[in-house]
Image 1: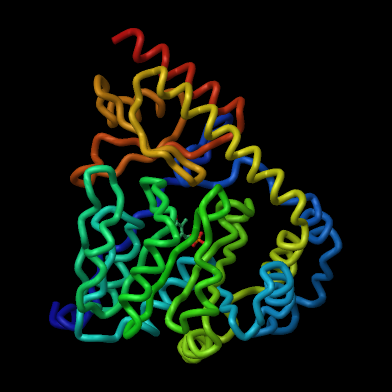
Image 2: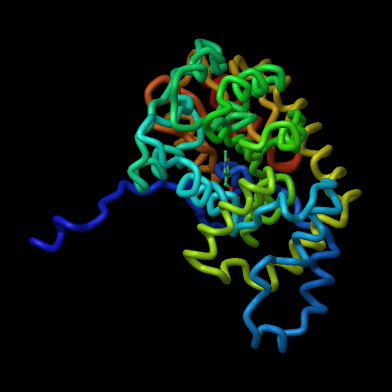
Length: 352
Ligand SMILES: *Cc1c(COP(=O)(O)O)cnc(C)c1O
């Protein structure tokens, strides 16, 4: 068909599957196993549906205020989007317009190359080293921008702030994006760099540590100038992206710091315990600072383990990608869920 010559053709990002089985154990998309703060439930119950008659606040003011208070960052330095995927997509469109290639690791969040293709941004992937760590010198070459997930996905590997800062210093002529989807699980945030460098954008989300993947809230911190440029693009695209309930319920989640800390602490505690048990079963994995463990077993194929677990309604993620196709990414669930998983893995491995 002739008209197809002028279609923008893309190979879409493939999210982890969302099965809906009773009694399933879902450890494949790094969601939080605990509910959001009870204050969100109260806010839902108290929500005045009459307000839905009007368009929502284009600046998501209730949420922007809560984030500004919590992180001690001026509202002019915060961009709010519908999940961090939305924030990142707008950041790619806004900042990566050079003829030079943008840089990111070969193994990282698999949406980066999808956006680069979608927006026709030239890009180059830089291989992680044998231990799945980034090599700083790989990001010290001429480029059109840099994006790093820290901790990285799906490896969970953290890059220390000294390395991040060296990379930022070497890239003062482009925008450097740090995707901190997993930062609350023990990593060190690059947030302080936004005051020192006006070309650094730090992106976070409510989907993992704040137990609200279903609400779709993401945000970014940067210099006033960076945020203004992103808002200009966003308002040229769609002004009313974030609905009113998300603004109100999101703000409640931010305000309950105690609940947030307790939830994250529980997940970190479970993660460290599970690391010990997986090690005993012979698994090899990176020292994940996220809410998942990226593991391989010397005697069992990852796909084989994934299929075995699926039959028991336990879902984990596998990537058919070179270098990592014998790894499983296992999200941290509740202690009971992880015990069930470990029991199945143990029985299977011992039967081999
Ligand atoms: C989960 C994830 C995101 C996107 O999360 P949203 O649900 O869109 O906020 C972005 N980056 C990384 C590395 C992620 O793992």
